[in-house]
Amino acid sequence: MAKSTEPIPVAVSACLLGRRVRYDGKDKRQPGLAAWLEANGLVAVAVCPEVEAGLAVPRPPVELVVAAGEIRALGVRDRRLDVTAVLQAQAQVWLASHPHVAGMICKSRSPSCGLEVPLHTHGGEAAGSHPGLFVQALQQARPGLPLLEETELADAGARRRFVSRVRRASASGKSRPPGR
Image (cartoon, rainbow, N blue to C red; front, side, top):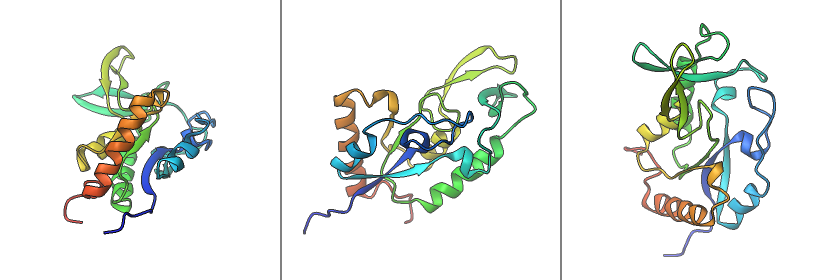
């Protein structure tokens, strides 16, 4: 059987690709990221869960908060701002429409896209860490899907391991949800 030359789709936090989608209207562009993906047979599928959920740019910042035993995405300055439900709903829509994504490069500390995001109490005190809401949905829907934070891009070994895991996930069909 001939080896496929189709690039393997990998979700990438849109701000890392230079898109000005962050709460402050800025980006967190990672120079060379798109070229590195292409050189490794990967193609970026940009995702900004907040923007795709209809939140404005700029917007009030949110953080993950433990409230009544649940993890919520609440406003930093105004705890009455609760975007949890819209972020969770959009994550499900995105996952259903992107079944072939074989990994994700995540924005660290993002309440949507981070792997280990600071968790706070309602009063603002530190309460550990938790995956961002989008990453949590991704991990639940596709256990074992390769994930890498942009802070790990400087580590050549981490990059190699990520590419290897993405290729295995793509080849095995593990990037697709069950039943597809």
